[in-house]
Length: 105
Image (cartoon, rainbow, N blue to C red):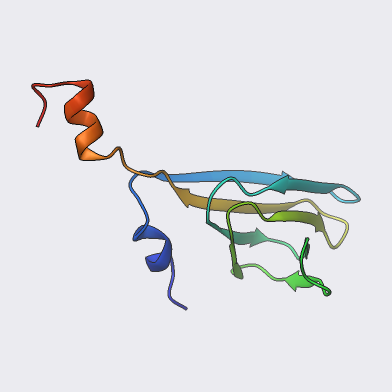
């Protein structure tokens, strides 16, 4: 597993969002930027918009998600599950900082 190396190359500040998914509930969202979905505890059922099959993920599993992708996640069991979504903010371009604050840098 490469970890986040492919994602770190794209950016600056790391952003991690933790989500608890309760049994018999489905969470859906469109991914705003490239990210990694990491399963914290419990078994998760993941559906991706453009794929014809689903994923059943276990604790510690990691899935790469692409910007703009729509996903559906639900707990596969009777207990809530914790997942995290890790992405990186794009750094402010140096030329933009110079324009915004002329004496900076």
